[in-house]
Image (cartoon, rainbow, N blue to C red; front, side, top):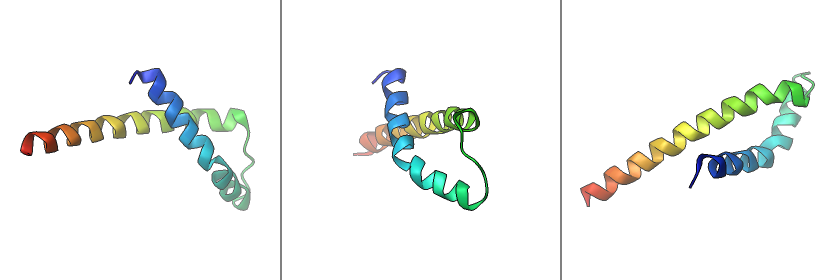
Length: 66
């Protein structure tokens, strides 16, 4: 899977939970806008890429143990 494919998958996951995040931000009195959310989406993508790589390494280690 290419980085772009992973990024698109991660964005789809983020969009799935965006309404829940918006609701929580609204409760906190924070207005959600594209300009506001963009840096957080970039951060989310970095976190998801790192988690994906970690999971890949864990899977490879488990495979070696068998």
